[in-house]
Image (cartoon, rainbow over all chains, first blue to last red; front, side, top):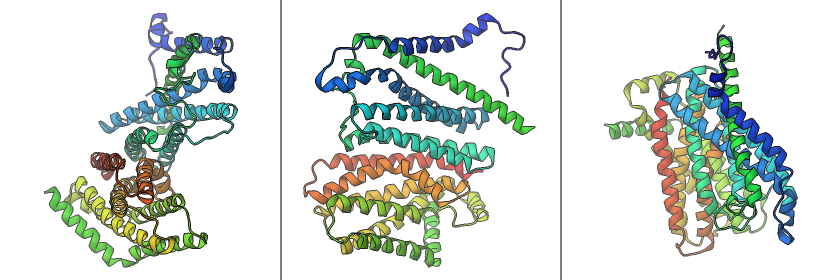
Length: 241
Length: 219
């Protein structure tokens, strides 16, 4: 049903209680976007200079991936909850989390491609991180096509929840074994690397922007997800009429 | 009880297949003609990488073709009948077992034709065959589950492909890795971990399918 939490005028205290994180997301992102363009970068020369010139993209590109992962995990959790009880509201949450995750995933690919072109010289390079991201996008696009090809709403919810769980587990398996299959050539992957954009090597000044930006993006993702869920719930009720 | 059900249901699958020979003959011809096309497309000796990629891609398409019919071959009325007499787990496991049998035969034949037409580049035959069998098991279990999902939608071939390709990648990547090693070197070292990964993937898929299949079997 539609959300009728505020029947007669909005109470300021309930508003703060319910929506403080939306305000936090807004403040953090406004701070990160503005200060992200002014924060002094660490000195770099020689090999790192390509990276140096484009380093501010870190605040925007990485946030897309964190948010995408958070959304796909949300979608997975609500698929499981749907199967234990078959309540339509969990299906709605699951599909909208997948939609929001896809939005952030595609933005992540685009910001990453621009960055890749200027640092590595090509829009796409062979690398486990990039391949894993692409497979994640393929899985959720297939999920949406599967939903589109089933008419009956209950059947659609059930079958797509099963596919969502199955595919998500296989995606995790893929992300775990992929680094064993191919060496990372370009994308910073984690432990033991000296790449300046990895969180543990990150310059102190950049950290002041990076961490708030990450929290801000993830909260923004949940905000978008909540709005989309409400829109779909309204659509479902009007569809019934 | 479950084993007995699986035995009868798998026996039914085999009898059904033998009765409608044109289905399996169709897949066999698909396999042979695909390999023949690749043979004609390359007019010289091919490299190990090309051999490996071609073989697994052909096997993937053969598997998708062969298994996609699992849940659409019989009428919904007959499915309703099975629903009343057997547990969903037994239905699923019997299909997986039958498809494993089918895939073992199909992958073995693909391999033989590939050896005949594209040349034998395999150096460690035992490793290659173990890998091929584990691959058959993996392809059979993943694709059985996906064909069950796809059969609930308005079924078409492209749906089966787009649903299964991203899911099958961890399996296929590991298979191709081991297979490449079997093509280039004799020793086993370094491949045990990948064999274990393959077994773990297969186990994960079967457990997931076992848990999730009842939800798509009931309407």
